[in-house]
Length: 149
Image (cartoon, rainbow, N blue to C red):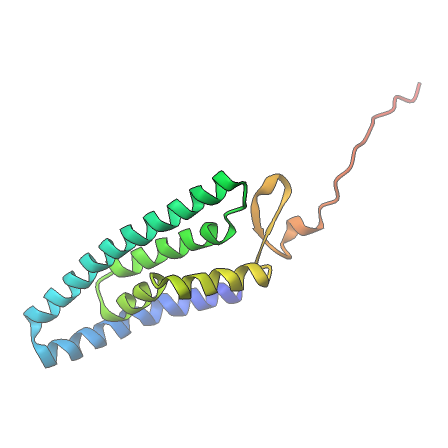
């Protein structure tokens, strides 16, 4: 439930921060350069996202070819996805967060944190689920129906 509150606050406060920053920057450098800067960061972000995504995909495939589990790459993929979405959102605050998601060392540290703290664990069939959820208490077994004649 705490994650929902954080997401609610994020979606509530980010537009206000973005509008404030756009007005401040627009007041300093002018409206047209501000619009150009927002479009430029979106284009640059899309280009960097493509490069980083392709590199992550290559590492993913290389690990699979070697028989290793591509754990870091499976966590870095969604981070890149979120970073790309943030970069395509107009504004300077979301651009800063999006560019932070594209920094390979920072992304690797976050993936390492997720793996080391067991924030994701494998469930039955290899699916990911959050630890401590209702599926964590499942007991597997077999049963046999006996007819009482």
